[in-house]
Image (tube, rainbow, N blue to C red; front, side, top):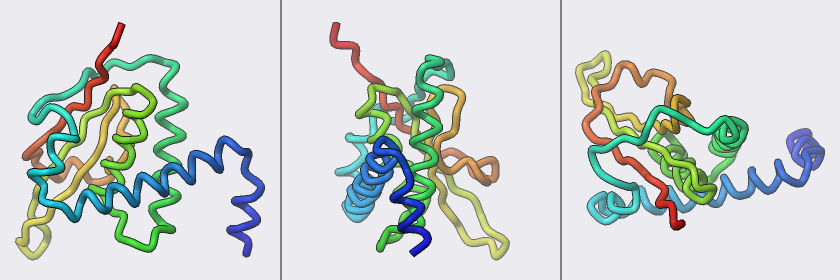
Length: 150
């Protein structure tokens, strides 16, 4: 009940962003269930990166999306781990005409088993998955560039 009261106390913009992140987390979870070869083209240019520069006007948007994805991923009825969060955040940034790069990495855990991780960067900021990313070797990356139509 406290969580509902907290949600209701948010301003309209925050509520909308949380709802949007929930929808994109669901979409990303569906995409994760498809063969990766069908999903990969929608993630951007494979084995490419976007610039590490950014527009200062995007900083607040990046922070708000990062926070919304982090919060809502804890309340989904489905698994919303690193790849789902990275895809959802990428799609939210794309909607706002902000470029990003999704990274896929592998490593070995303490038992010697392969593990995977995904994270998303926009400019110099890591939007999702930055925790522990240094342990992983990048095996693929996707640059979501925004085409300027003018």
